[in-house]
Amino acid sequence: MVTKSDLPPYDSYFIPAMHAFRERGGSLTIEEMEEEVSERLKLNDEILEVPHGDGPRTQFQYELAWVRTYLKKAGALTNSERAVWSVTPKGANMSDAEIALIPKRVRDEEKQRRKSQENELELSSPESADQEAADLGWKEQLLELLLHLKPDSFERLCQRVLRESGFTKVEVTGRSGDGGIDGTGVLRLTLLSFHVLFQCKRWKGTVGTAVVRDFRGAMVGRADKGLVITTGTFSADARREATRDGAPAIDLIDGDALCDLLKSLRLGVKTELVEEVSVEAEALSAF
Image (cartoon, rainbow, N blue to C red; front, side, top):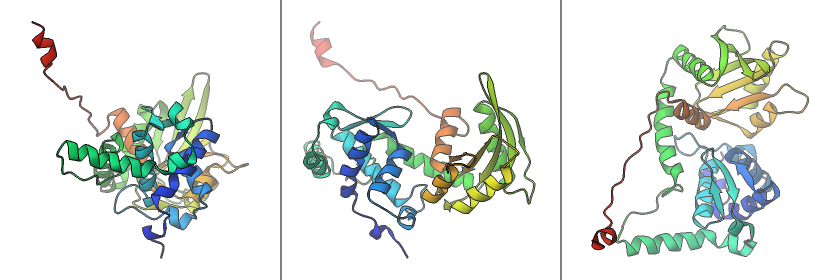
């Protein structure tokens, strides 16, 4: 049985990750980064699907989160609000030797910072002092709640997500023996519209290739696009099958992306801006 101990140490991901960014135009989504690094390190699907505890991420995804955080702390990467990561001028000029030293350098800086602040808190997660730390906490809580919804409740939630995202004529069918098709909808983009079939899966584990293949078989000749929404993750093979050449493309929304959608649409997720007040002694001393 493959376990997390079979994965390469996360320190070995830094150089392949930076090479991937540079060779792909200087920016990548998180999903693209995961695909690039796994291919460069020749990691098989069994290793890629090892879960990280009971959370929504795999161990590989969790360890790449360390990489992103450390590269950002080192000034080599930056990220946008839409979770697109890009190389900074500093990162573009780093040698492989400098990249390899980033994990140790960042850890040493964190220790020094905590020591200077007399802070005894340990760096316990890869996203410490980074937005992804908070993201992972609320996402785990949200996914746990979604897993306990009744099947028809989860389907109605997905129906609402699609409507809020611009779909019209969204209907939940939920007929058994229909190749896993749970509903239909129409997405209009300016002058064009697409008939979409969707499937909703409340899974805690990994959705494999067979699910995508069976769904495509059911949708052929009935729709322009397919969409599979899950609370779990998709295997690397399932993602490849979804975009296989010569076959109708199927879009995949995993648990992490679903949480982001619910947050942006404010469906079951509330965000608050906290006002921070500080006293400026220098400004007062001028009076």
